[in-house]
Image (cartoon, rainbow, N blue to C red):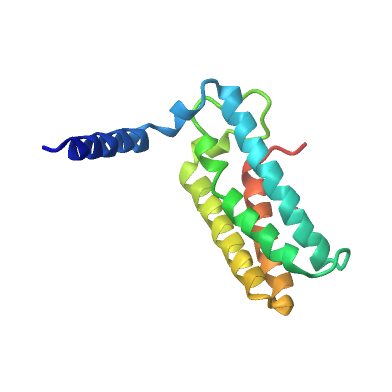
Length: 153
Ligand code: ASC
C-alpha cells in the first residue's frame, strides 16, 4: 500500500472512532453538560426573541430575520445530546420526566426542530406575511416541550 493510502485509511479509521464516541464523553462533568445545553438554549432564545420583536411590530422587518432564523435552526440541534444520564439534578431546570419518557422528549425536540426549520425557510423566502404564522408554530413547539419537561421557575 502506498503511504498516502495508509494515511487515508488511518484518517478514516480515526474519524470513525470519533463518530462512535458517545455524547456523554463530550462532557467531563455533569455540570458541563448542563451549562452547555443552557448556553445553547440562551443563544436560541435570544435570536428567536429578535424575530418575535419583528412579529410584534417592535422592530422592522429586514434581512436580520432570515439571519436570526438560521441561527435558531442551527442552535435547535445542539442542546439535546447534552441531556445525558446523570444530569437531571443540580443547577438545571430539566425535569426528571426527560429521562423517564425519553421518546416523548425526543419527539417534542424533533417537533420544535421541524418548526424552526420551517421558520428559517419562510424567513429566507422573504415572505413577510407568512412570518407570523411560522413564528407562532415554532413558539408553540417551544412551549409544549417546556410545559412537559421544564421546571416552573
Ligand atoms: C421565546 C423563549 C422561549 C419561547 C417560548 C415560546 O422567545 O425564550 O422559551 O419563546 O416562550 O412559548
